[in-house]
Image (cartoon, rainbow, N blue to C red; front, side):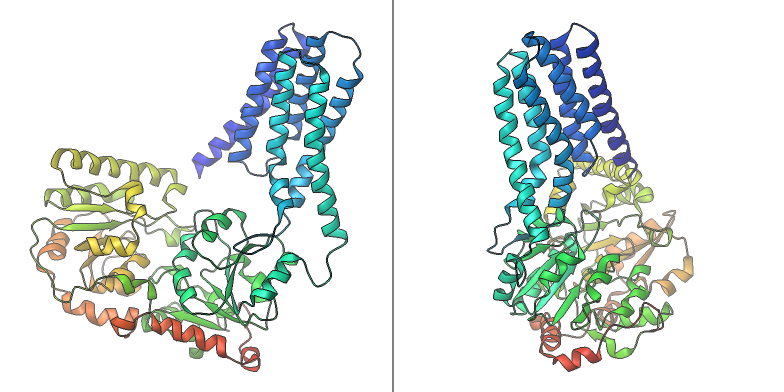
Length: 563
């Protein structure tokens, strides 16, 4: 997070500083060519700023750059008053002032994928800023080459024509909306989706959706994915054939909620979920994006949903243990369908000479009570594993890079494993190679797991293989009370003082092998392995088959934890 702030600050200083410098050089010195070069450099800096600060207001810098280029153009032509250049200046000024508002207005339009709807206006509006930067670079080039001002005017008018078309279409959409809804609403009514998967989350969270898409598709009913952040549109659309719709506003959402919809599924407790909960004619179902003993897994906000699909009875107990009182009829045990591709090891394998160990450190969390990250103390753990001849799969949480300290710690661990791979030939899996593997593939390749408190442990539990859990809160005997899943694993103290003892139990003796099977049923349900995912599919189909009267009876309660 700190690194991102520093990049934004550098980008801001560069774009502003170069814009001012370019104008001063052109206006106050005779070095016109140098001023034009600085203006082009300022354009590049402004483009970088727009990448690191999406939606940044660069009107002041762009105005300075345009003014500097036009002054330089006039000096290069040296023809006195030039009405064509004046016309060019007026067009450029209009574009500088209008591009931002048009882009913002375009961002309020629905965008779609996997649906036969052509929505060119938002896409063009989004690119107007880039077009303006390109236009200014062209004008700067024309000035440097002393081309007639008519060249710059024609280029400016072409970009202005595109901006004008966008403005006219946006105005038509806003002030004369189509009867019966826009093209997206019409296409969705024809598609007849029975449920919506609603998603809002910080950048990098698309895995929360993609883990569920294959199973939602296997329900066998048409559905639509509704997104509240535009950056998720491309990656999620690439992962499914279902329609994917980005709705920036509540008004835009109204187009998506066609009469055929019967249920809404959620994969997290995002704040914007309340925007969808208001559609009380639907049955609202929380799926979560993993099962763990973390504090967020017993979020009181779960009470607003009509149904809470959980992997096993342990999840229901977790809410009760946290003092969150939710009626028992809201819970439905469906298993964790994502584990169906995990290979099960029925008998413990002890004393492996060259084991493969999966290490999955989690991230630091949004709040201190959700910080279970072991990266600060992991180097000793990895060195002990290497001394035992282990091959390590290092698969960090996708949010790790959000914390600069965690990113540096992960970098040092990666360097350690890469160096060992070069010297011993052991094929450690790190970095992008580890992220390219699915969690199920990582589990199947490994003989044991070392993890922080996270949903990875629940998934790994399905394999029957041993696991160790890090006690980063240094809770000692109370750790397994707060995190019962650790009771069937081997607990690593924060200071790693028992690392040798734990690794011996994990890789050699495995005294908790039988206890894991009992825990597996409590956390992952008791479903046949050959049809494990049917637990979820059948439950989802039941919710979709409910009558409107039944759905109305299950309207969401208030946000109170005692609802």
